[in-house]
Amino acid sequence: MRSHLLNHTTAEDYRRSVTAGVDQVAARLASTEQPFSGIGVDGLTPVVDGLTPVVDAIDLDRPLGDTAAVLDELGEVYLRDAVYFHHPRYLAHLNCPVVIPAVVGEAVLSAVNSSLDTWDQSAGGTLIERRLIGWTADRIGLGPAADGVFTSGGTQSNLQALLLAREEAKVRPEGFSRLRILTSECGHFSVQKSAKLLGLGPDAVVSVPVDREKRMQTVALAAALERCEAEGSVPMAVVATAGTTDFGSIDPLPGIAALCERYATWMHVDAAYGCGLLASPTRRGLLDGIERADSVTVDYHKSFFQPVSSSAVLVRDRSTLRHATYHAEYLNPERAVAERIPNQVDKSLQTTRRFDALKLWMTLRTMGADGVGELFDEVCDLAAEGWRMLAADPRFDVVVEPSLSTLVFRYVPASVRTPGDIDRANLHARKALFASGEAVVAGTKVGSSQYLKFTLLNPGTTAADISAVLDLIAGNAEQYLGESLDRAS
Image 1 (tube, rainbow, N blue to C red):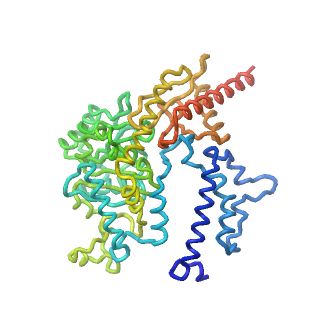
Image 2: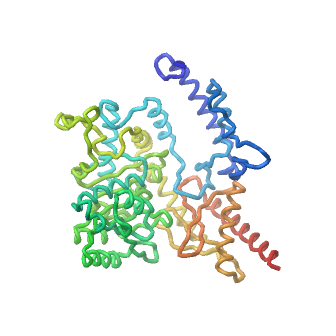
Image 3: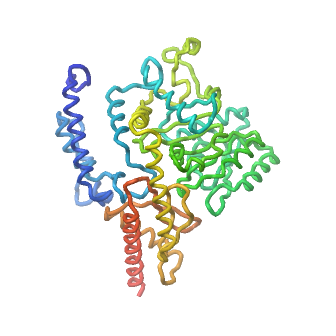
């Protein structure tokens, strides 16, 4: 079994096996004609006629012994029915196609397998991650005392930022029920999840109304902060969003920053989606005010076209990261601080941690920041074109003009229908598309009504793709409504 360990004696086996894997994926990518096979849950996990699900039928205690054979099997149990984000008609969630330099970085970091918790496990990897944190902080404008650390994703980044905010609020645990987090009603659900994980009360998260563009209303935020003060509760943080998941809306950051300064409240900006603007040659101004934040979440695996996972949390004042610091004699003893040994675990909620920063490093050193930003600009331009198409098409109702690359809309039949009919028609259209595999779109609710959503993160998607998918949606919705009339008659 030692023959399967990667070392100096198996380097050639490693090269051959990885090349075979790359060849298989490359062939699959080249031949993929639609984003999904259309197979349903029951197709992958049959439970009728005594059939055993394909994956469950595999005996993990009887290995195939050969990587090539395993790759062939993988083609059947995974690659054939994977959802392919690189396809131009994958329009659903915040999943991006990835750039090749980052994929090369992924292969390198997996093989070397550095762990970024301590210097004696990573050395140069530590310095690369620190340099990228500094680069991102400079792009944000957080100032010379800024710092941060890579994380597994936006949820973890938001959790760590709110942990720091809780500790900086200087309220003892018995007073945690008084702490409040104020965020847009369109903010990410991880804010509520973080409040629970941080031991705050059930009323901890205060939802602030949004305007017609789905941006937090600063007047409503001011009123909420004033109520907190009057009630004796403590506004430990305001979470502004630079790119909401549903609408791509960007909260008015300068106005929010001014209120946070007035009430001495921690300002966190969740820029998991909108962080691509940091590299944009034309749209950086949309993030004006972010430089006044106390902490910022960025997800490079969204708008920087990086493979999952690649995220970071950044702070204006590096000393606040001490709230995540614990010393273990066997790992990061306190004396290491005096010896100026840079142990990244001192800043992180994680201990063992992948060298995900290498992917961004490879990307920037190959393409440059402008190259990444131009790709993000392309999808934002496409969304603007898509909005014009939707606004001019009487078959559809579109909610807001996009700030980034998200379009929320629904099919509205020409004949008068009940709200329930319209909701069901849109739900059916989405499911029918997924079942066909021709396109993948997302869904959400606006108020109590069912809507559809395009999240455009593929520069390879065209206006013609959008038009074709809109026709498919309309056709499936009309078919459903026609069938429902037949059933009712």
